[in-house]
Length: 255
Image (tube, rainbow, N blue to C red; front, side):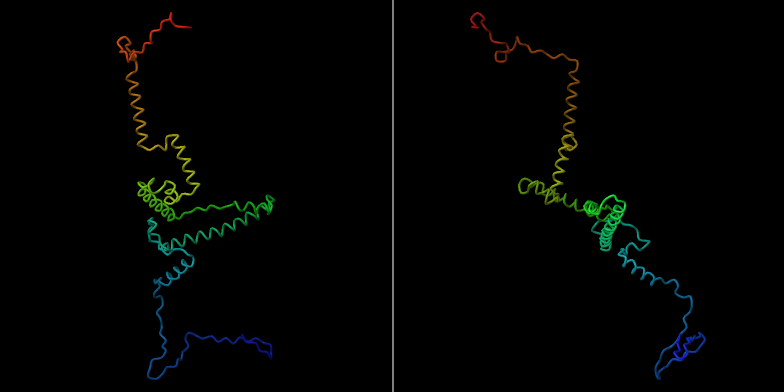
């Protein structure tokens, strides 16, 4: 579009180039210059390399692991040592997003409660410290990691058990090896007392001995059932084993 300042008119001076026109390009002597070649149509339509490249770029910008892109890749629930770095970063990225959404949910809840005249802004500021959001955690790698850490701690505890009472105390093993807090130690002690009182926390060998002793007592009682107890023979008892009272002369006794 061209504007003519003298006449005030707007002229459309577009120049349309036809596909049938000839193109003249300079070419140096003694060498080959620019050439124009016609490409065949409908070729290389099955080449998806460029599309895969941009797809990987898209997933990478979204922090999604590239191992999840392949549709033919199977799901492998491996050990925590086999966790890919992308999976770990993706898990942390989801955790950061959840923290942001928690703040958003608190703002929405604050607006709703204040507009409904349920609480005042000052009351909600005090309540917000005790509000937390629990999200469904579907990443199994963290669970596998906790299990392997617990297994390693138990192996260390088995190795250090012969030295408990000699070089290490039980409190040291609970705090340094099992990594238990004061609240967990107190809670475990209370639960073990309740289980021992109910017979649940007794070791299996002790339980078997108690059951066997009870069965033996019942068998002895069943054998003696219906039999009259034998009275001791006081006439044939010896002097040291006699249970007779010593003779007392009533006449000489002073009252």
